Every structure is written in structure tokens, then in C-alpha cells.
Image (cartoon, rainbow, N blue to C red):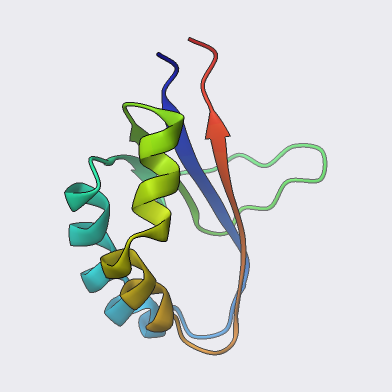
Length: 97
């Protein structure tokens, strides 16, 4: 079964400290949904149209698990805590195997 991944990049964050409330809720929600944090805010080398702002990569055992974790009530509460003034490109993608 192919794994599922959450891939998110934040092109604009006006208040990085404002993400604290989201982070405190999102981490446990991701773990409860079976997700494993692979990268968050690590070093980035941007190429082509890329940006160097915060990037997050989370792995799930399946694509369906990744979708279910996003749609879960506990993660939706985390989303509600995202502050104004942020821009996020979020995708759920299926792995190749």
C-alpha cells in the first residue's frame, strides 16, 4: 500500500510566533492520526520557483490515513488556531509504493 504525505509550505508568515498555538494542537493531532513528522522548518535550498520559508513533511502509512487525519475533528481544531496573516500551500500526496 502506498504511503501518504502531507506537504506544506508557508510562502508568507507575518507572525511566526503566532503559529505556536497551531503547533501545540497539530503535533498531537498528527500523531493521533498515525502521522510521523519527517521535516519541519529544517534547512532549505530553494531552486526554480521555490521559496525558503517554513516547509513541513509528514508521512502516513497510507494515502487514506493521511486524508482521514486531515479531516479529523482534532486536526480541524488545530487548523482553527492558525493565526491571521499566514499563507500556506498544503497538499496530501500519495507515495509511489
